[in-house]
Image 1 (cartoon, helix red, strand yellow):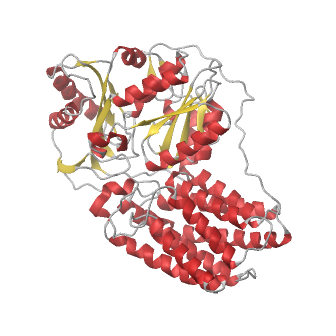
Image 2: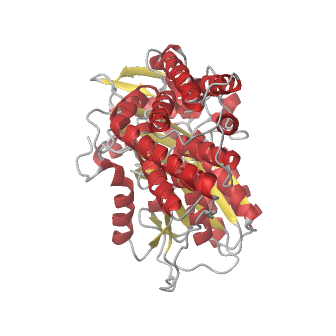
Image 3: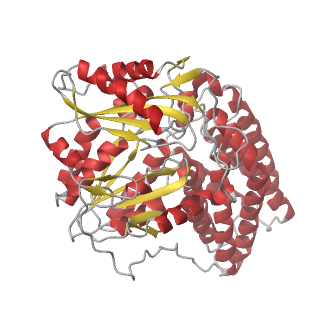
Length: 578
């Protein structure tokens, strides 16, 4: 288990602060993560990587000469927010454009894509390469659905080396894409990992057994077997990957970089014993081993597990793999003289504009801020239970993420309301703060939902019950745009019934409190019913039948939030019209 922490909700932030303090010669803290503390020539492509915290040395440990220019670092096992990615990219770019590269997870895709749009709007040229090396996560015919694990290093290393040579954004993107296409990984886990403050691990593996193909957040594997000898494990890993050759690669005479990665609790000495057998088997198959790596490169807190990556080289990729690199966690070749950035280089955050509302809207803004405070209080009270539910059908971070998001939204809403913002502006500011601080899929979804609510409510008038229903419908459409539909076992399963009942009851003439009460009851019933569903979206999809019998954490938290808002409306109805 993870033993050393203060407040679990602050763990990721405190970890970044300590990491920067220990590596000031190489990295500096910026909003959302870290950037290089050393300069780069004007016109250099900036490789910006990132993902959830809890995987060190990914991602901050790979920022430095010959590797990444910056890393967006999200909450534990949760993607960084779009705001964080955007801020890190702006702090890292030097006029040559930005290449965003990260593991292929739903939350990361949502937030990095949103950041790419924001950067493009700001006049910065952007490309994206998603790492898809884990062969256990999808069949080869659906390789685009595969998740990224330790193969991240292969893609980041060659992209960073190409950028350091002064190549163009298109050229850097091309070699990163080719590196991803020629990288395959496969792993096993012997025990689960525990997030700070958790009493139980996110998943368990029976004593003496190993999960085959387990993901780095506890995503379901493809099989289970007795723990073999070191030679037996090497045979399993090598034989599987030799059946997954990239297009055009023949084993005999091929040059390959093997990376044996420890996931957190398997010691280096054990890894060396396994790698000895890996090297023998590759050599016996006719493969030429080139500059291998053995150690912890993409971890998962204290998970006991091992993965093997094979990076199949061509002449250009081999030259880029061998190029010098100097980052806190990964160094290769001789030292390269580097100049530190000037002391006045600081990242400036971009605040969401606050519109002063009309007198009527400011009165409604007070109710909105009170409701958001009630949401925070409710999430605080249920965070542990939401995490427990999510650990069954996800990765256990939902409670922490919702807690961070609602806390940030509450602080932002209170501040905006105190400055005279209208109801719509309070919601917009709260949504931006929620998505920024929470990160992950839920952060992006709640940010979009609150923004849509605020857009419809506006800052000019006291909203009627019908207007509130229209705003909720706009929020529902914003959430549905992320791709989930009813039956996927997500928040949508509770949101859609809530939206439908609220719309119907306000249209029938019910006042807002009565209509909201009926809609909240419908959401609660629907959320409980998700226990019977198979997950079809996100990381929970890989858990399949293991998730049946447990409701979806996102649906449950949504239902809890509607009940918290109902209590606020009933206590402070704000004189909304029918």
